[in-house]
Length: 148
Image 1 (cartoon, rainbow, N blue to C red):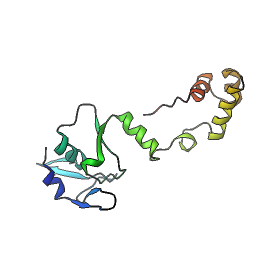
Image 2 (image 1 turned 180 degrees about the horizontal axis):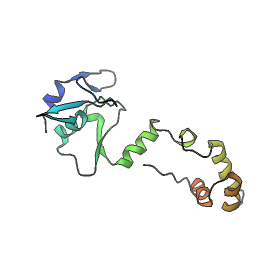
Image 3 (image 1 turned 45 degrees about the vertical axis):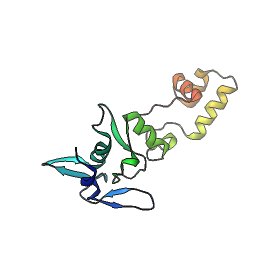
Image 4 (image 1 turned 135 degrees about the vertical axis):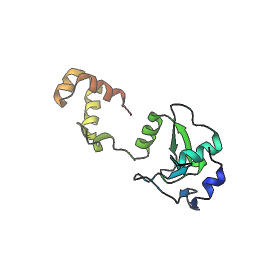
């Protein structure tokens, strides 16, 4: 684990957003990488550990600020894959709804399915009309979404 001085010596400060931008090597996705005794680590993980200690098993270090190069510990949190995926959807960083490349229904069709169900039509009839399974209609009606 590195101390915060190691991190702070390798950043530029964004005074507007409060980000600490890693100014050394970054991977193709923009996440900073640090070489520590011949091994590479993601810089935001090192920064989080320098303040909070070891990362708990099964958790990832996620960004609140949506800036991959940011290593400000105040902008980082430990979360699960599902937490990170949900955050990505909520912040518009991940396609969802009709913008998802695997979407089979438009937002308009989803609204129509909900309306048809409220009007008393069976899931089977609605499913047949829209070319989906009755289980899909049930999930749409109840707002169930699968993340991650």
